[in-house]
Amino acid sequence: MPSLVGSEMCIRDSTYTKICPVRNPWDKMVSLYFWRIRTRPFYYHLLRMLRGKHPRPLEQRVSFDELLKRKRTTCNLDKRIMFINDEWEDYFFIRYEHLHDDLKALCEKVDIPFDPNKLPQKKVGYRKAKDYRNMYNKETKDIVANAFKEEIEKFGYTF
Image 1 (cartoon, rainbow, N blue to C red):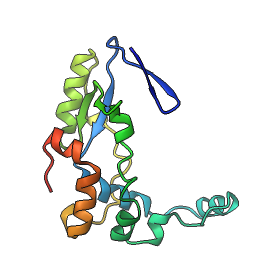
Image 2 (cartoon, rainbow, N blue to C red; image 1 turned 90 degrees about the horizontal axis):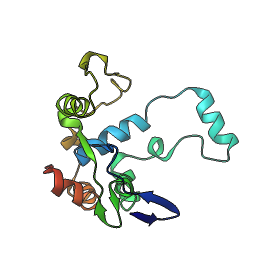
Image 3 (cartoon, helix red, strand yellow; image 1 turned 135 degrees about the vertical axis):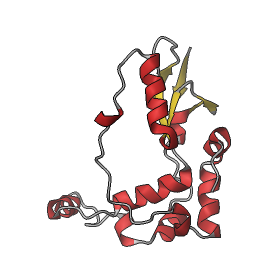
């Protein structure tokens, strides 16, 4: 049955497998922060200036705490994908914390061979914080808890 989401038409169809990755929100926000503050080539900053943007993205100009405070209402961009008409979409969820197991189960479901050795490692080495909990204070912990409350409840994530 079609349903309108913003200006897009979404069709609920059970003839294909819809896949959605999920991750502990507190861990995800720390990982995203370090990915976005990574060192980038000079031309990246030049292109930003030519497009009329600040040469450095916001993440490179503010601390992790300040970024979460500024983006408290927009830090959960996944919500617009996971929910249609305020209901959970029918996805096969791949949990980051169980990546190999969930990918293996997905491959079995769609009859594709699974080889964990072929998974790419493109984003390894940018994160400086070993334990995401060290990046948070009470306020920022609560910001993420409020923004991701549905995912935290559905997947049993804890700080």
